[in-house]
Length: 250
Image 1 (cartoon, rainbow, N blue to C red):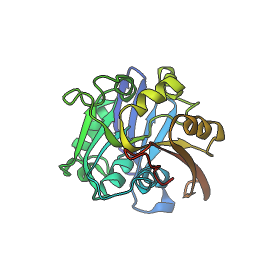
Image 2: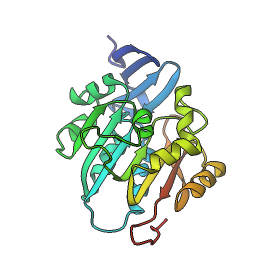
Image 3: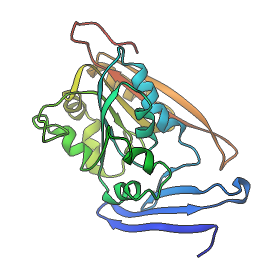
């Protein structure tokens, strides 16, 4: 096998062929580039992950106080959102909901760069489940062992954008009904934050603002070493009302 390219895993799944590969490019020397593909969709690389990390940073910036915080992350990927979340010492427990078991296996086997950080942190659990199914279950919620548990932050990084989804069944989540179901799992003062590719969409910010106490969008620009230029991601942050009726910081 070439030292410049290695297919670490290839697994057919019900939503497409999942691939994890590692390669090198001359301009990056001995740096190992990890990339994830699902069918024809390019999902993630460790070459640039600023917007995925900012998903956690922007969400926690909107949560006042000293914690402790209970957090859900929807979508594991290469783990950068979860790792950024664990940097916040207020986080008491972090459940990462991942639909594809092989992605969890990569981390448990430490064959991806951030695997050891997540699996060695006692606050973190990697759970094989459908985030959207659990979000729609307003009775049992995300943790069937603790029905009705409320969360201080729910961070979502699964689909490309609210209108460009990995599977059509995900579309319902981005409707008013789906977002209100998601909101029911948040504690007073809790935050829902969403990553998306490309420029923020004003129409989606407006939809969140109509359903939550406050909603903002953040434009995340970062260097793209592949193109030699820059790329843009979006982070949407929607806050709920605190128990005393005050509004969170945007």
